[in-house]
Image (tube, rainbow, N blue to C red; front, side, top):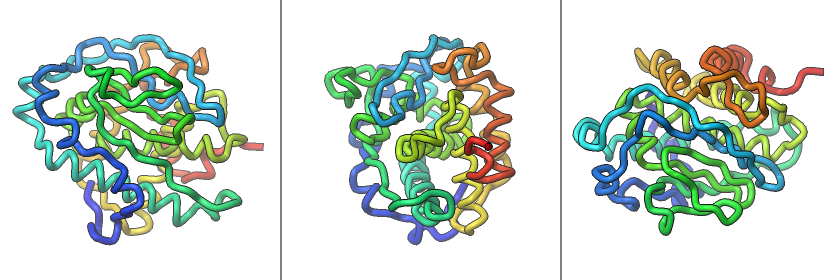
Length: 261
């Protein structure tokens, strides 16, 4: 994915609060690996009270070793794509907020990258350090964060991964701002809102999908899916459900993600 006009999509209010990969340091990549078993919470702290129920640990496909990740990922490109995703998604919601909701839109705080293998340096939510291999929206602080190893490991499989993670966590911040739209399947709803924002930005002309981006998103949703369907509200849904909800947002926009009367 690329911004159509890179300079026009920069929103300094969010970018200035975001920690870049350089702030975490590339050295963390030689210490931490995405293993075959990671806990994908993906912003379960969304909501007015900022509480969260821990989801089950999920088995993920094989992922790059630290050495492979460090060798294959262009960290500067990853950081640039992540910052662009922040700007594009924030601009979409700022532009279209009044199309769907009342009141004034406010941007969440973007903490950005953290090293989950170092709890002393990781941000906290409800007093608990954010763990490795995850991305979060914390309702307590209205803050978005993502582990550097999760992002670099996913980015090694395609640049669309960074856009998906940012847009999904931003979806949780939207749920927190309009609490009555949140459904029991709130993780799947965040997938839907992510698609609505990304494809809405493309319709606005601020983002352009490149060949292979949609395949990368499908692969990323598969990579991040729970092994079982969302029989519990803490679950994220299986691969087919995540793709189904993302596709609903792609085709129907924000309206398709909202509870239907």
